[in-house]
Length: 394
Image 1: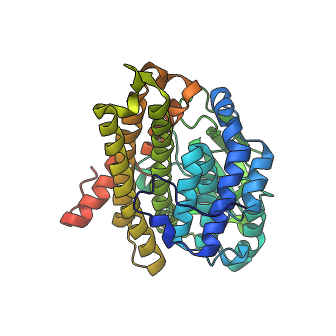
Image 2 (image 1 turned 45 degrees about the vertical axis):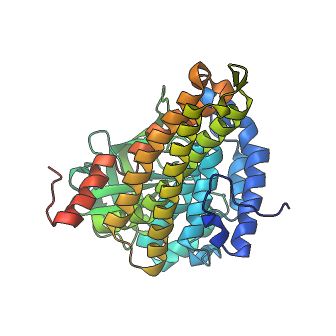
């Protein structure tokens, strides 16, 4: 295994603060991504195909699934380290970062946060090993930012079972998952509850969303639930209201901010390489002032963003992170990412819009990262409420 070195785009060397064990995991991850993901990612992206299953298994073998949870024996790792994992993944490909974030945070996080000890013991190791691939079913065709009030999928208690009816949209990996965590409103008390739903359950159907032009490797799906019968034993026993759903989102939102930085870095690294190779007016374009300005501005965005997310993840470890902290991180880093990938694509000129040079994938994927896990507008209003003490959502 090669020795650890911070990536050049970590201009202030934040990654040096990781423990020796964490650094070795980063090195192993980089080697895996370079050998297994980078050579195939552009073709997969162009063809909107999911990763071969050995990629999922390889990520599991590296211990990337279930890091925060005691049942997976990965719980000694910090939130800052998990953030760097998200950054390193997205630096190569944002879709693989989304896969890990979904499996590790949204799916396993739902069970860890809202499941009983028995459910944690039964399900978390299966997801951690890669035996099961999960999806997170919250967003609906008519309910996105207003999910807390507008959730229309309904679960009705029937003896020892629940009957679920409704629809979900934009569910990452929903058409290929083995299990989907479905959030539904209890018909009796009107509270949101979570359910572990194997996708082989009668009445569960999923159809991949076609013609998507961002995160094309991720298999987003429309899901329809028609009289889906789920035993009480598969209801997340600790889910009593939307408060538990929000707790899961709070855990993962900061990691999305880290992934946004990684996507910025992917575009930036491609731009730096191109600036040293592309000859115009008899010399590499990297020797021109305006090209250096684009690179310097991009590096400034990346560096400021790393400083912000390092602190917000440390707050999660300390138990002091609140919704507004993770929301500011997500809003700021994704806004800076949008600027950065645009500057980097600009540096390529016409070559920046063809897949041969790679930067356009980072440019397109940025649009999905910018929107999911809370739009810029919603996260801005969460921060605004904390600043003023007044909610301005409607």
